[in-house]
Length: 430
Image (cartoon, rainbow, N blue to C red; front, side, top):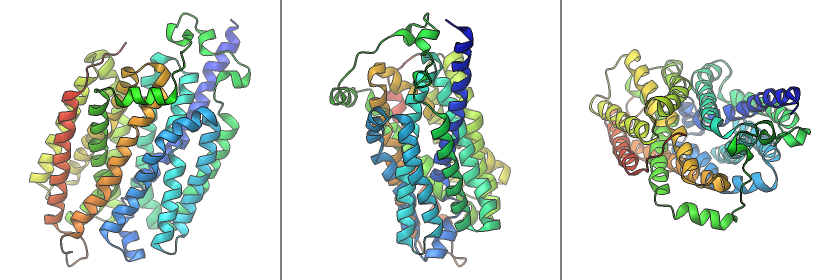
């Protein structure tokens, strides 16, 4: 094998990863972007917390609905074409959202964004499976999740600054314009597989890698889907995803900003600075959790249980003592909250991948990926209805009593997610 050619493949794959990571950055940006501008939108459109919760949730409904089609389109249309075509929709949706004269048009913009960015994660996983070895998959997923954390950082701290300087409308229009640039870069750089550039596959580069040299046996789509949903250990992971990500998206992505402004009297910029710890938790937490699972605990289940238990303890603490904390304490809370409710999801996808043969990895990933976004879709408006059930304060915000009920719901959901981790099948790193 020509070592120079092998070196080209191994170097070029990182350029591909960079382009796809930039696309994934905007996926997470849009996912959490409403938190720091929620009050601006309520005031602009003269709407309620329930309607704002639904506006946030519509992204997740669209994302969840598109996960199974994402696998099909990746296989038929191809992952590169799927990502670029749908990112165009997302870019246009961000601009429509920024220009929206009414709440109805804002909903249209969010639907476009939700549908558009839904076609990034699964195609990215498929492309990475062609350019990276099997043993590198969990590590690359962890890095990708860390990139998502940078998107969270932009959606909290950076968006708060942009909204203060430029207004929320121009901010989303600029994000849409930047997304169009990413579309062009993905189309020009990304290739589905090394063979698309006339290069050898990883199997040919590394013949000693048994997984890379394995030729998979094709399993029909419906047969693969039936096998996934009939596996009893699939469901604890799926239900855990629903509740865990419902907590993360419902609170971290939307109502944590209003909570800090109402209960602690923070400005939008101050709340954004505290919530930026969610991003730092994802960035700093994902790679060490992977190392902890692989090298220290040598287990997938133990880190799951530990993080779920810690999340229960955190939410119980915040429910019992919802006010009076310093910004340092709140920053630590959201940092740990992010690790336990977001960084840990890399184990969810890794465990699902290890439960099933590689031939149906796309099907199993697509099916389980429905549940985290259903969680966000349910919890965002649910928590908004809870807030609307209580009278507003003289300042126009929501009361501490309302937030205590919100936190009680989150605590209950965290207990369910902990039970799910105890029911999961133990799998071990190779």
